[in-house]
Length: 156
Length: 206
Image 1 (spheres, chains in turn cyan, purple):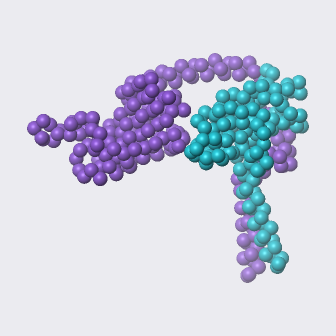
Image 2: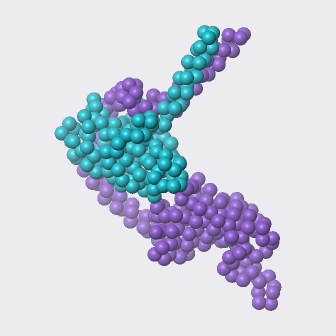
Image 3: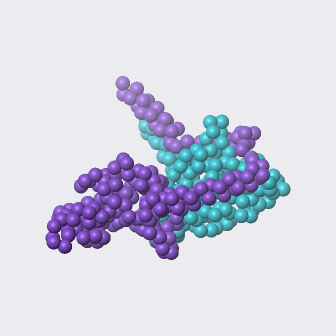
């Protein structure tokens, strides 16, 4: 392979990998066991927490929405920067909002707005929050797509 | 020349890879994402739970406000409500220009009130029905009624961010009049036809 062609191939691969990763759902994540599960606000769509991990002062939460119905369903996920404030954690006497970088961008799944889930399809949404204090073993997770998740165990 | 063209293409590809949707936060487990999260911790937005309690009190006020707005919207639109459904009848003359299927700008007020009702019933199934008067060819009126129902759906989805999957549309053309199109002596009945030119929005609560 010519050097220039090899460079193109590498760059193409990098671009494709970047695009593929935007969904935030690897096959393993899509199959991960649910820690807590409940019906979402959309009939036939189940909302599940698949990860609640505390590490280095950061709590990573993965939320899977899964279409269990026989028809395509639409779930309204964060559409703009402000929407991320509707997804937050409470533990002890504190409320924790999604972490934001210096540009105020949420450190979370990119905004998608309405997400269409085909029959049987799922989508992984994730966000990083300041971790609750070490003494807090459980937290509540509030979203705009399902009733609150209560007493979600934190893994360290 | 050949090489310059290739390097230009390479630069474009690099930009494409970089700009493919905030690649830094594409993966929660990526080291750069974790580093960004750790760096954000000093400025983390952590609020005292007391503020949350005050927010809930505020939310209660908002809910009360919504109920008021909801009642007002139902009353203004003349909505008919049963335990199972809410039926809203909108005159086509308010929504569309003559023989057109595109929404008039000044229809936003009426449709905005429809949105107030829809937002109070987020789990409801919605059906939008288009109806025409009895004048003209049945096949033409059928198509017009379907297009008008679809236009109302499009408006609600675009302006109200209502999930398109929740809304079904149906055109009935001139087949379901709510008033006579002609008077008993066979003459044209403009008032009756005006009532027949309509869009009905059915919100199934259960």
